[in-house]
Image 1 (cartoon, rainbow, N blue to C red):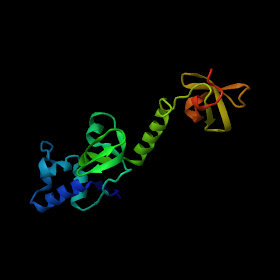
Image 2: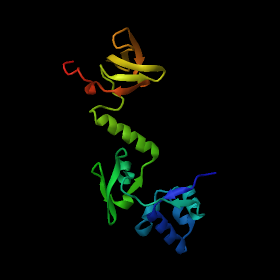
Image 3: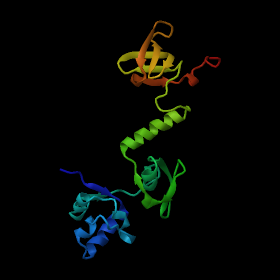
Image 4: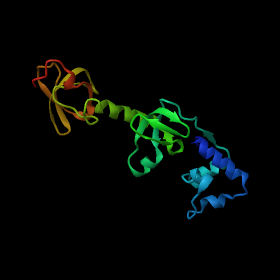
Length: 192
């Protein structure tokens, strides 16, 4: 069974208005027609989704609140998704911690996957690195080995690590490493 569609309050209002008129489903599926005015928020549904909406197979998403993670719909279509955390709600709009702001209908709630990716991106940005960037003297853990490892050097997709901080080195793929302590946060390495 298909999950219920989650629609915005604006889309719900447009759907109610659609249902109050004597409009036909055929009006929707004409690919040359684009909804305007009060119906504009219905443009992004496929005919299959619209049929589900007409059958009542949807829920209306809760309104935004401070602390919600949001994506700006227009920016998402033009650029890659820009995700921010709502810091302020105003009459018909919102402001986010990354400088986004605007009409509330232009935003959607971020998915759990998008939120996790943005948190990870911000974590790496805080130490002025690209996500997954490993440097010499970082302390890391390996997906399949216990204990902490020190990165000795990095070459392409590989890192050379020492498992006892002074012993032999092992060549491993960086994708198996998780940063525990960045070299910039280790004491005594200022001169390295």
